[in-house]
Each structure stands twice: as structure tokens, then as C-alpha cells.
Length: 82
Image 1 (cartoon, rainbow, N blue to C red):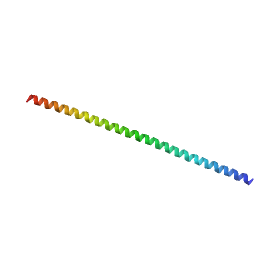
Image 2 (cartoon, one colour):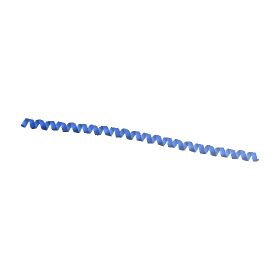
Image 3 (tube, rainbow, N blue to C red):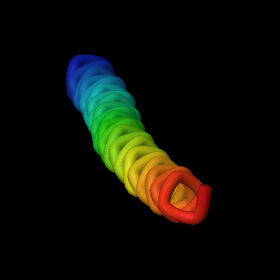
Image 4 (cartoon, rainbow, N blue to C red):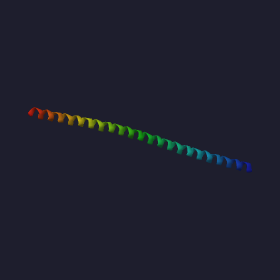
């Protein structure tokens, strides 16, 4: 009878250990998934920032061309009236 009790106790301990290991594995998987999602969002943010920088530079170039164009036109009009 004692041997059966010990065997049942061992089986209970084994099930408890398996459940703990499974819970730990799930927690590690959840953490890994969260890290992947964070890395994905960081990558998207960096890409968006780079694209924004490109558009700011493009707008700056357009503004410079317009200023240069109008400065040239003003200079030409002043030269023709002199």
C-alpha cells in the first residue's frame, strides 16, 4: 500500500513539474513574441522617420529652387529697367 501511495505522489509531482515547465515555456514564448512585435514597430518607425527626412529634404530643395527662380527673375527685371 505504501508503494502505491509513493507512486501516486511521484506521479503528482511529475505532473506538477510538467505543468510548471509548460507554463514557463509559454511565458518565454509570449516574451519572445512581444520582443518581435516591438522590433517590428521600431523598424517601421525608423523607416517612417527616414521617409519623413527624405520629404523634408525634397521640400527644402523645392523651396530653394523657387527662391532662386524668383531672385533670378527679379534681377533680370531690374537689369532690363536700368
